[in-house]
Amino acid sequence: MSCLTCPENFGFDNGTCSECLNSTYSAGGTNTCQSCGTECISCNSTGYCQNCSYGYANENGNCILCPTGYYSNGGMDACTPCPDGCASCNSTYCMNCSYNYGFNNNGSCSACPSATYSMGGNSTC
Image (cartoon, rainbow, N blue to C red; front, top):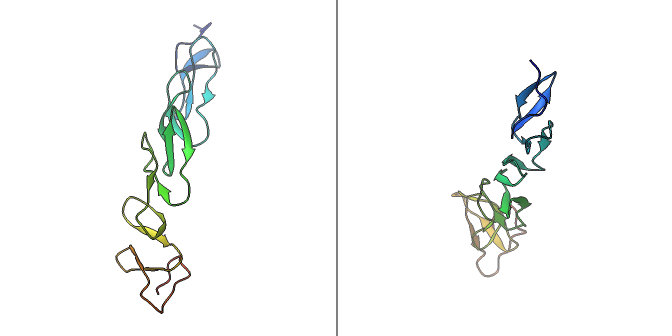
């Protein structure tokens, strides 16, 4: 038996309706699975992203790359600023420090004392 049109989130494949794979969707009746978009892990039948990749924030159903100095765990999270002195980070620790901040062993950054400096990154004062 063959399908003539497929339901929502199913696409036409060799005469049958098959469920759309991750990162794809179908509005139903279109018979094709379409991409949810770059950095979108899952979306609904209208293409509205419901789950973004790590480092991307969900803004009105679109995945937006967090700017430098911010992070996001993905999903529906917004971009969150890194702690002071931290140029790039994740939810646990700094990965790179800002200029004149030194990298500490515990994954944080501290302002350099007087008469010292740091070029940033993961260098010390």
